[in-house]
Image (cartoon, rainbow, N blue to C red; front, side):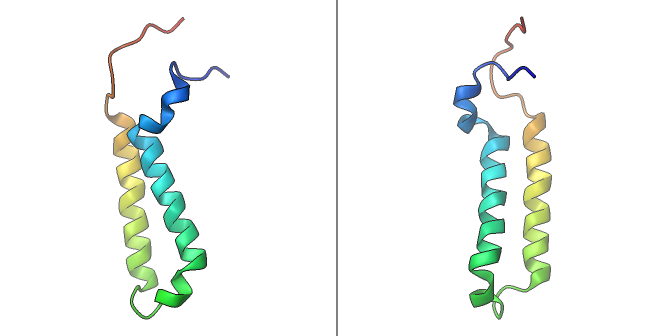
Length: 71
């Protein structure tokens, strides 16, 4: 498996940032959702997570830098 060029700067990629945000929401569901269940319904959480996942898909399609020749 070959890594993408400039993989050490992956934190700049929108898809990586959104993936981390989705992971944070999953962690928040486990730790904080029991305290927020009255304010945040499971349907609202699922909708927010679905919107973020769709954003992740779109972010993978966005060109984020100059073309680099793959060797």
